[in-house]
Image 1 (tube, one colour):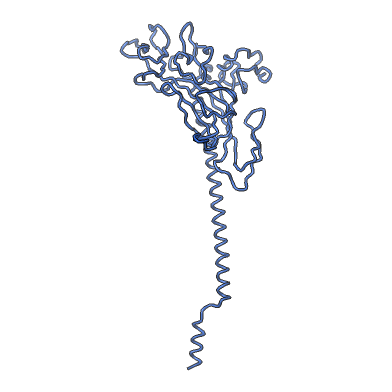
Image 2 (cartoon, rainbow, N blue to C red):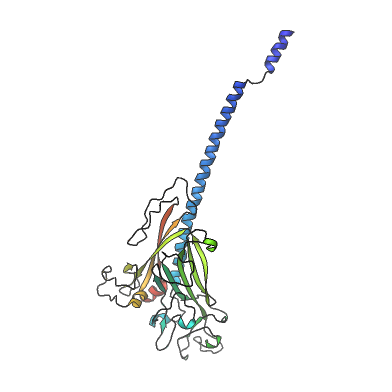
Length: 347
């Protein structure tokens, strides 16, 4: 009886301290491996999100510039732009007065340039957060959709299709000035009103710039709205931007040479069409038919173990970088065609 009780107690005995320690150790090893796997997956997922965001912002920035470039130089129906010359001088980037926006019919038809670029350091008072190293690109046109009625103080362009009208178009901010008619010359059916559009693309060192700024480099746009410029952020993480301007030297609609500044004498660099006269800057700018835009996009957050010691070629004489920080970067480039300038030349 006593021996049976001893056997029963031996069978009911728990694990020993050594066995318990071995079990805990194995469990800790398993938990450590699982934690390491979870951490590695979290880091990989975080880096994937950063890279995807960088790619999206870079491509989105180029797409926005491309879309506006394709519309730049649209000044209503009727082929007004074909016989026009560039207004001289060109309006300043921040000009808001209708009389100074470059539209005139007397003594000859003058229009503002579709695209005008400025090197870093230009004074643009309507852009308080302009980065000192940023280039500035101004695009001008009129709206593609006609306005139902003019708003007070807002400049509009009205192009005439009636041969009896005394002028080819009216550009004004007063409702009483809009008396252009359609092809039927019916005074009760006025020609379409199209609002003036001025958009300035530039880089800022911050997205939200109050209280010292958030430090996020951002592509922004200042747009003429109701007589004043309003600023909006377009794409975060855009640290640098460079635009090369494709100049059509033989008036066939295609760019023959890409230059940093069409207003300069580029005869030494552009030799494909001999005899082109570079002496008139406004003429050179009016011959720009394409834009080759390059942007340097960086991730929004730094990466662990990342050291960016690379240099980046955006088409300038000097490369950008190295930055020697923990952000990942990539250069994105695209060519945009100024359809309203190049298309008229092809015809």
